[in-house]
Image 1 (cartoon, rainbow, N blue to C red):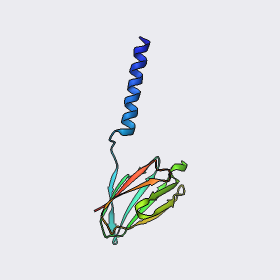
Image 2 (image 1 turned 90 degrees about the vertical axis):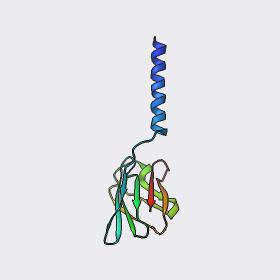
Image 3 (image 1 turned 180 degrees about the vertical axis):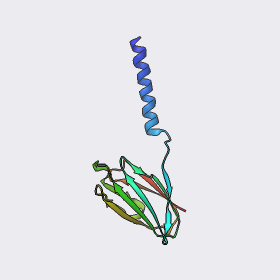
Image 4 (image 1 turned 180 degrees about the horizontal axis):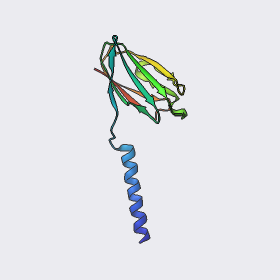
Length: 123
């Protein structure tokens, strides 16, 4: 009986781990608001990025305002490899990052350790 119980618990844990790492999860998406010919989005950095997916309009200057609330060293940088951006995110301070919106596409960003990710979509 104990072996069956251990087997069931083990299978449940394996299923949970597979869902956690490989399953599709809801992702917060935000479309930038345009004010005074500049589009802006506030990104909260706390155990990840919120929103994780940002939609921008092509050709309109864009500003992403990252505010890091998490004390983990993993999230102390944000890297946009396609734009050559690698910025420090001091805890509790808003960091303004200007993004080139001259070409359309999907562009990834990540923390300095490449563990947490986001996506920038320019349409």
